[in-house]
Image: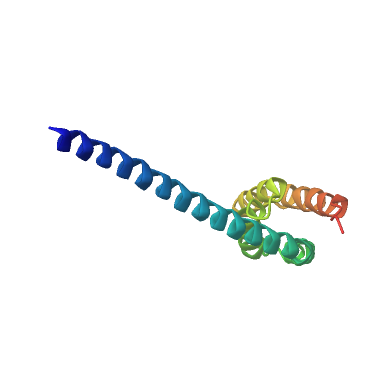
Length: 130
């Protein structure tokens, strides 16, 4: 019988060792994941100024498109804003984009112009940390 106790003890010790190694490996994997997440966030943050400049440029393009009653162009650019705003952390841009897309689909010139003015003001009010 002493062998059974030794075997049980050995099994228990091995289980503890295995569990400890798994936790250590998991901790290292978490550190790697955190590091990758931080690098991704940093790269995204570095792209924000160019993204906002592009948004401002798109406002100008949409204003010109509305002057020609080109609602399709406004709908496409609004759709793009709707998709990209949240990715860059600007929910308001997403909301403006959705509104512009809907206004364009309804051929609502006044609403589209109102939204573009509001989006333009919003973009001008954003301060990017240095």
